Image (cartoon, rainbow, N blue to C red):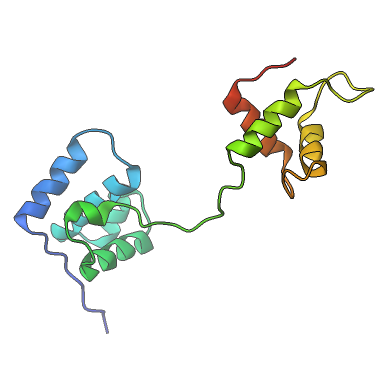
Length: 150
């Protein structure tokens, strides 16, 4: 037995807001995709047509539809925004950046011509500034400072 199709019924105001949102200014690609999915669902397009038109998966369409139907938003533009995502907290703060820069500006250890990223990372750990740090994090920190000691 076929599942009952869940219809999206946008108000005229929501439709106008979404159409204007898509056409004006720079926007997040995911927000534009969500807008287009809602507009196409409101036009009663088939899921496979929406997949083909927008190049997205069936589950993406399903998730957008369910989120819209839950109506946990006060305004249609609130719906388009990404929910807060948990993630790994930022470990490198300005204090760590300053120490990396300070080490990079000092004379390199005896027997070496200049500091390497790995040597700076090792020195940061030896000085108990951080518990651990990758050479890539050191590189990104130095890149922010536009530092070129060599």
